[in-house]
Length: 197
Image (cartoon, one colour):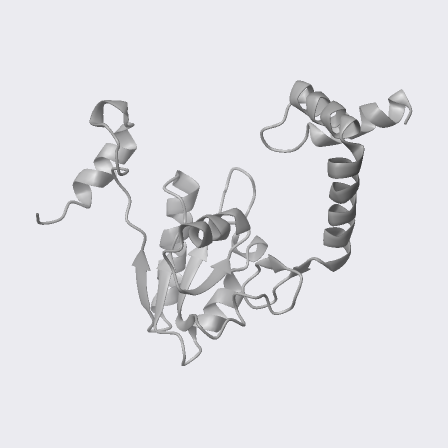
């Protein structure tokens, strides 16, 4: 490898979330030192991913099959859909093993500042799915940010015409959280969403 090629790889890796130029440089050096057991298998896996990755036309998840393995899983409840902003959110819910329905990935949030409107997200497909007779509930799993809240309100308004039950993930105190470490927005949401004890 030439230095220019190494610099190019470091530059590309440093664009990944959580990696800066120093971390990318360390990763590249580590991979070159472990060529046989790490670098070559990684190259092969990335090449396979690039050639076989598909975006599910039903839910916008990424997988190697179409429709994705979640949409085709017969053990899941297809009548309940959890709407998330990104595939990473879907993966987080799957990792927690707390949801057995299906998903719908929006591909982001509405954002006037970034120029992202409803036509830029996977919203029309969600409305079409909601009109299906098999859907009984849609859970809005957008983030508690301003854009996430705006998106949730927009979706709730659009979904009201379908007659499907719409719910929202709870916001508030995290398990194990201490009050003095929480921001004002989280404390406010927790007070508003309080429950009988």
